[in-house]
Length: 224
Image (tube, rainbow, N blue to C red):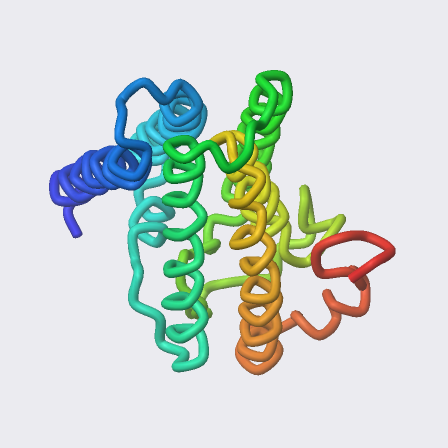
């Protein structure tokens, strides 16, 4: 993909994300006066856009890897499809919650959740800056090596730590306690993805067995 094509693809993906978020938030809510949704999009999409510009200028190869969506592993395709369905429910439910008044999250908790989302995304950025082979799909490239520095010195799957933090905080940031239910359902899907991913890495990535001996925990030190 040329740099010009990559730029157009990234811009198209960003515009599509904005439109999808608007549809998922404001149609269920029945109103544009939904400040939690506007703040959520600001906190999430602006850092994404800025980091995308940075990668476009300094590491377009990583940006192109992050644009790939087609999984090679059959099990991963099922996991991703189910995860997308759960995440769509997570994003739509708060709008209905707001419309019908099922729950009321206090402002301070909404703001705290937005801060956690920002921290979670910064953790993802840290992971990507440390590992330029961190593709969106599960695959091992010819020149890929095991990364043992930065967040990878703490846990084996630091990107998923950030994603989990973003997912759980999203329910509260959008003003819904009920949305914590699909957020919780997202966790076993992440675990299934990690276990399948590790099977691929053990099989195809040289040095990964030794890395697992050195860094014992996948997501949370002392727990798992």
